Length: 550
Image 1 (cartoon, one colour):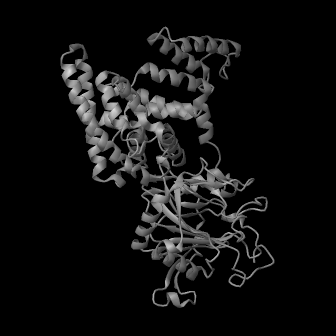
Image 2: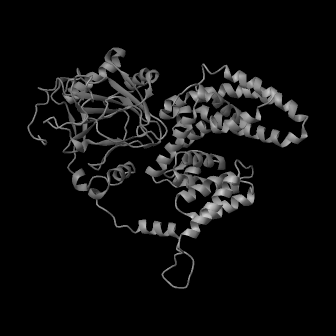
Image 3: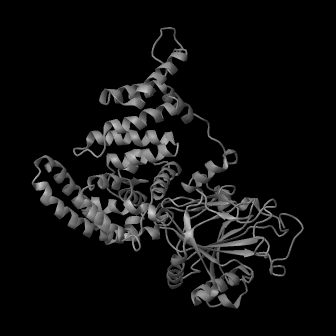
């Protein structure tokens, strides 16, 4: 019954906008939705069985429906045994959203009869209480998997097999699961990933006894995406193959003529010899050329590339630099820490980045998560021209804000920040709590406002963000590091610890070396909270300087 129950949800998906893919914690409610729909679909299947038994020509459809229902029921049982653990795997999270969106359309067509409409109407009655993923969630989940694939250099076949960085996390994808990833990439104009996943779908289709998609559907997307990548000859071959299967395919007929004209208009190139042999395999040539490219020093690596390298644990600081870093117990001459000194670790020098261990306990973490979740909204960034907050594809998470009066645990954390930084939090922003979604990330950015961002923080009236305190409220199985591309530094989430750094020089100028990013979460659920400390009130706590390096 799981096939139908998953799918029924999204017949109502457009009724509400959840953006569940932006926070894993929000996706946990989808399992409750599924359970309700499974019970409803059980009744539907019972009613249909009586009708199908009398129609021998529908016997195959009946068997397939029951088999699929049993497969999905087994998957639902596995997910329900440990919802958080199940959703910590981005492949499971994507497949859950897929089953609740695109797959449903097929089932909905099967249910367009008198019996089915009764049950669809019954499901409609749940729209006020159940959480529905949308097509945007499906696209966001698919894009997240592409992001993980690119950032962590994951092989398509490995991801489709449920393997992430050598660790088996889930069962294998079907041909249709791979097809849907390719289709979503196609809709986004990403023809590179379209080709990768359509090829994988084709390979898996050939191995399937019970086919989950069709060869002609795959060929249609694969042919055009191949053409869009510049390989006209292969695109023509694939189109001809499609026309053998569906001779009346109008789009393929038009594309065939177009591709043939394209090929005729391009002069034939030969190998270096004069024997008129086959053309050089340009794709293979390009790969070989890339592989033989000389290695560059870290100073020559573009920011985006360095960001992704650091996410993979590559391009880190030299041994000469790391040998100078120290760990210590310290009180910062504050009576608050006399009985329990701070465990302070240097992560980078000049600019200084510290990691403070065991500065948030489990009870505080639990309270802060519980209070923040009902307030979660899609995380935003500030438009540097208007100063307005807006969502962005380069920041995938949800956040909520907590103040001292919300709970003594929040107040205690804020006081602790003031104690170990030596800065007042009276003018700081409220505590922001964040949960990252499927492949959740935040690309390289500054925490401080640059000179041209004249509207940033204007409404607060507390000046620029002088410092950042970032609490890690969960361990992360793979990925999720905080990286500083211009410092070759990476901080890996450790529950209960916090990172601290100054965003501004003592002169008040922004420190551009503090540009940082949150790497995509490969496996696990990443919870953080941050305290942005502002300039006002710090005049005698961090004296000003006249030079940038003072």
